Length: 104
Image (cartoon, rainbow, N blue to C red; front, side, top):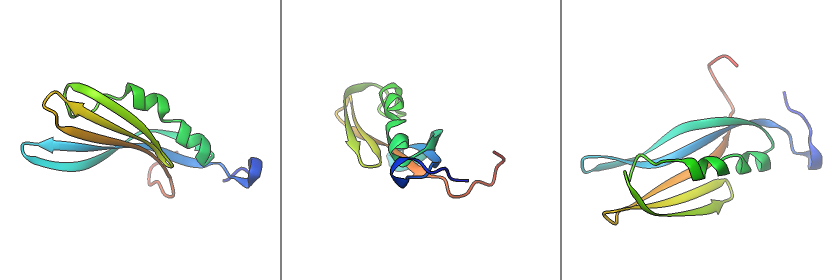
């Protein structure tokens, strides 16, 4: 069920997702996990992950020497540099939930 809010934007369920660059040995890949959910407008959902971005401890690098956080239209991008100089990006995005096989 959707609720009409100001300017005609409807409330929906949004997933707060982190997409991280992971590594095992010399193999790297992108992994994603759900950090939480938000019910409301897209504008509200985009702002919701900001505290999570600053508290997030990435899987890699184990020790973050330098971090830069950038705002994107759909969330945030954290650029994490480790002590070895290798860079590991983490993207924090909101995505609309369109189907869920579990119980609510």
